[in-house]
Image (cartoon, rainbow, N blue to C red; front, side, top):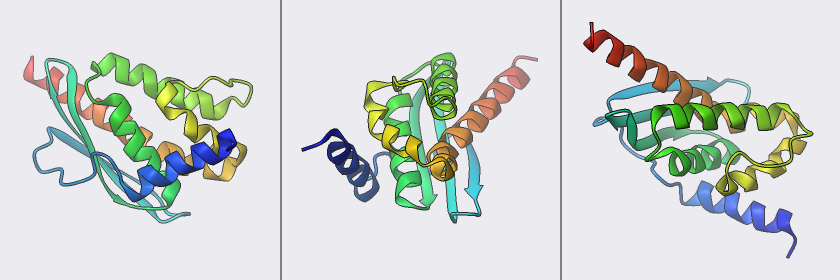
Length: 148
């Protein structure tokens, strides 16, 4: 079985059995992202404590790539400190922007590498990551406001 076949199976598993997909009512901050071109609509929520992302969850609808990426994102970022999550987001964006960069930002995200061959699908992969980035902005703004 080729690595592309294995990666396709991983993506389909995350699409059909998304991790951390559900209600966002208990989250500290929720932000939304959409891709009208593909019809993707994602909301990402975070519950955090002491600068650690205790829970990262999403809900929404979209193409298989968007939902698989969101599922993978929640697994890779839950338990990270805010700064670690920011660094992972930056590495993910760089990985999709620089075709010469072969190494995935996290071993658990390697299956998304097959999508890099299709630049039109970049937004599908990065939508949840961008929503997470905005959610982190909201958490940091909330923290700064409470310390004034």
